[in-house]
Amino acid sequence: MDYNELAKAVIAGVGGEQNVDNVYHCATRLRFTLKDNALADKAKVEALDGVITVVEAGGMFQVVIGNTVNEVYEALVNQTNLGVVSEVSESKEKQGILNAFIDMIAGVFAPTLGVLAGSGLIKGVLALFSSIGVLPADSGTYIILNAAADAFFYFMPIFLAYTAAKKFKTDVFIAMVLGAALIYPTIVSAYTDGTALDFLGLPVVLAKYTSTVIPAILAVWVLSHIERFVRKRLHESVRNLLTPFICLIVMVPLTLLVVGPIADFASQMIANGYLAVYNFSPIISGAVIGGFWQVLVMFGLHWGLVPVMTNNLSFYGRDTLGPACMMAVSAQAGAVLGVFLKTKNQKIKSLSLSAFISALFGITEPAVYGITLKYKKPFYIACACGAVFGGVAGAAGSAALAVATRSILSFPIYIGEGFVWVVAGYFLSMISACILTFLFGYKDEAEVLEAPTERTTLTLEKPVVGQTIDLSAVNDATFSSGALGDGFAVIPSEGKVYSPVNGRISSVFPTKHAIGVISDNGAEILIHIGIDTVNLNGQYFDILIQDGAVVRAGEQLASFDLEKIKESGYDPTTMVIITNSSRFSNISLDEEDYTMQAQPIG
Image 1 (tube, rainbow, N blue to C red):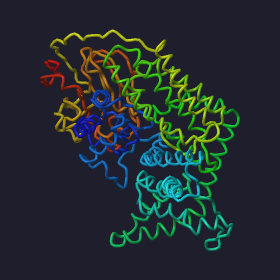
Image 2: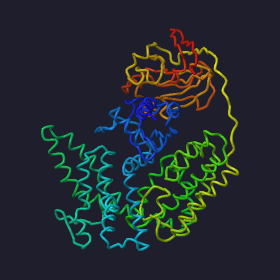
Image 3: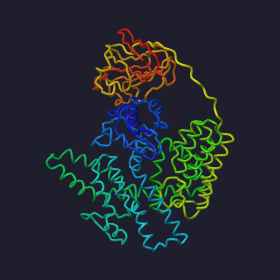
């Protein structure tokens, strides 16, 4: 696979570099925050060789790559300026509270995923060797390896301060000093010894901040606002010197006096709240997580549970969420193995075998998006098996000693109470899902051969009354460059939008500024009302149709307040883009209407 070409194609598919506000990656996905989701061509990106699927959730455009996501991300960063974090985000699109929270958690934890899993695995191996007497806990070898395993968790406030600073777009070194201050040896000793501290006469409520999650993240969030406030008000001649000075002299005391104790209290409430739910019924708790874990992963919502797992380890030294997640992952592996054993289609057999191997090592996206979700029944069977054996793990009191990927290599981190049931449940969940999928969940479908497409003529009516201009004259590089496809633009003289073709509505964007239409002969048309009008969040727009509606050429689709849009400072020029224009050999323009004599390519 050519990672450079794939990265280039993905960037083009999301609307170009200029449409990307932020991008990072987790274990399997490129996670884009786009300025305008209407400019992204989901179908085009999904069709790329090397892309498993595309998920739009949590306010992000998520491109699922699989195990090679790191290589694709590196190629993407090398080709663009997207690896450089700007001071202030240009995106003004509003996110819901849940979406913003999930986006924040994913942005903070995703960069640490590899070292988090590696450190956790070392912890598990040490626990195994210590329990069977191979490696005594007081031996030099154990102490050194334990330092390798425990360093990340002990100094977690520093690492999370770094990733949080990248996410909140503030100075990473000031943030890291802030995280380090929380676990400064004198502060830790004062807490351990019960020594009372005060700052300018104000009492300091000390807490245990080693291995914690929330205090560092919350402190850096506050820092991001203070740092921007200070930086804007200092002359450039002293800005680089005085900004760190002022931020540190304000934020370290503020964190220890206010932010830290509040965050520590919140951490305790989360830990106690989860423990109360778990103690109410370990079986139900395990079954719910085992049954719905993969659903949460699909939408990126599982990141919301990562701080809970880490918090459990910090307060209790064990986490009971992990074993149920293991059952969910093994069930997906079993379901895709069942498809592999059942199918006679060589392409599906090859894909399912590859997905099964990935799932064994904790990466389920190829299995879910490539096989189980596509055929539905295998996915439902896997969720059911995950729920059953997640409940078994809960009943056995199984727990993890660290956070790690749900891999067949991760068994050592479950050493202790319920360990046998983690191992047994993992394989029983896999075998059950495999057998049920083989018997009831999958059958090969007959291959359908598409008939050759004949030469077609597509007539477009102008969707907006006004002055027609060439697309290259539009004051937005995303459109004028033709990156999204060929088309034209109209400077509107009235605020009504009509269908340019007979067809159906393929999409109505939540911000109401863009409508997708697919013509009866397959042309994919994007009507984009105004430039940057996504920032109006639907204000001044009124949609008259719904997704999936069948429309006729000339039928009104929407209306907009032309004068209000202008008064708000936005250019109302309306673009009409044929996003699959590469399928057509010729596009001709007529002042009355637009006619394309087209021969689909391929």
